[in-house]
Length: 106
Image (cartoon, rainbow, N blue to C red; front, side):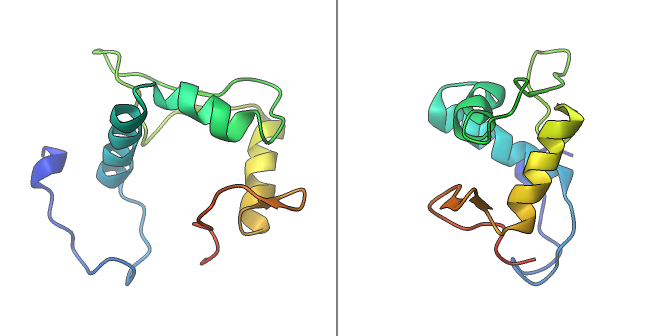
C-alpha cells in the first residue's frame, strides 16, 4: 500500500505504536526538505553533536532510497548514546539536542 493512501487508525497523540509507513514518510520529508540524504543530515545533527565514533547509516532499497523505517546501523556505544539522550528527555551533557523536545513525553 503506498504511503500516500494510508489512513491513520486513531487520532494523533492518542496511541503510541510504531508505524513503518510514517517513519519512511518522515525520512523522505527530511531528505526532500534538506536536499541531503537522511544519513548525511543525521551525521550533522545527531552523530557529531553526540560524539558518535562511527558515522551511522540506513540500509537502502534496490533504488538506492534509504529505508528510514529499518536498518539503522550504529555501533553499540553509539546506540547507548541515543538511549542516554532519550533517557534524559532530549538533553545531552546539559544541552537540549533540539529546539523541540520530541522525546519528552514517554
